[in-house]
Length: 341
Image 1 (spheres, one colour):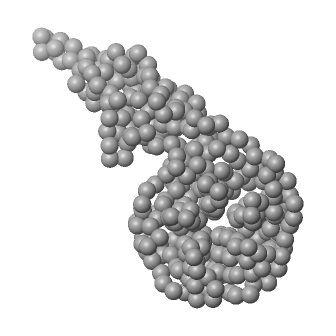
Image 2 (cartoon, rainbow, N blue to C red; image 1 turned 90 degrees about the vertical axis):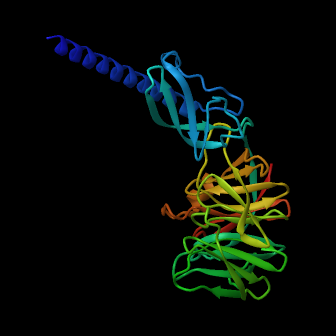
Image 3 (cartoon, rainbow, N blue to C red; image 1 turned 120 degrees about the vertical axis):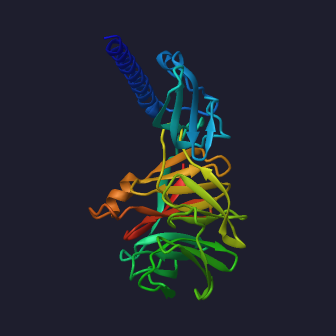
C-alpha cells in the first residue's frame, strides 16, 4: 500500500511539473506573439512575464551559433529585421525548456515617404524580363532573365533597339548587373556563378563562383569601393571587387515599422542604396552603413499601368540619370524618369 501511495504521489508531482512547464511555454508563446508585430529597437530589454521569470533559474537566447543570457537587444548579438531565435529556460526544478521565436528589430529612424513627379518616359522592350538596369549618360546596360532568353544588352535611352546583344546559354538565368570602370559584373539566379564582361563590346572576360553564403543571385550595384549584392533576403552582401567570391561584410535591412525581405534590384547613388522589394511596388532608400530604411517611394500607380494584369510583371529596374531616378519593370513598355519633390 505504501509503495502505491509513493507511486501516486510521484505521478501527481510529474503532472504538476508538466502542467507548470506547459503554462510557462504558453505564456512565453503569448508574449512573443504579442511582441512580434510591435517589435524591438536596439537597446530595448526583453521583459518576460513574471510567471516565467519567477520559475526560471536562468533564461538564455540562442541565435545562429551564439547564445546569451543578457536579454538586451544588443546590435552585437541581434541584427535589424527578423531574428529566428530559441529561448532556453532552465527551471528551478532543473528542467530545460526550449521554444522557437522571432524577434523583430526595427530601425529607430522613421521612414520618409519620398514624393516625386514624372518628368519623362522612354520606350522599353516589353519582351525583356528585366533583372539588372544600369545607366551611364544616355547608355543603358540591361540584364534580362529567364532560361533560354537571358541576355546582356546595350542601347541608347530613348531607343528600345539594342546596339549590342550578348546572348547567354539556355541554362543561364541572368540577374543583376553593375559597372566598375570598363567592366560589367553580372549575377545569375541559381547557377551559382557571376560573369565579367567588357563594357564596350559585351564580350565575356571571365566568370566567378558566387560566395557560398549567397543562396541565389538577385540584385547588384557598386558603391565605389565594393560590389553589393542581394539574394532575396533582408541582407546586403558587400563583395571584394578583386575577388567577388569573397564577402567583406553583411548589412541587414529593416524599416521603422516594417520587416523587409526579398530585396532585389539595387542602385547606389549619392551615399545611399536604392532597392526594390520583389512583388511590391516600392523602392527603398537605405543607409548602407547601418541598414536603416530612411525613405521609400510608392510606385503603385506605375506598376498597375504596366503589369498588364500579370503578377510577375513587377517593378524591377532602378537607375539614375543625374539626380533623377529611372524606373522600369519586367516586361514593361516604358522607362520613367522621375524627379524628387
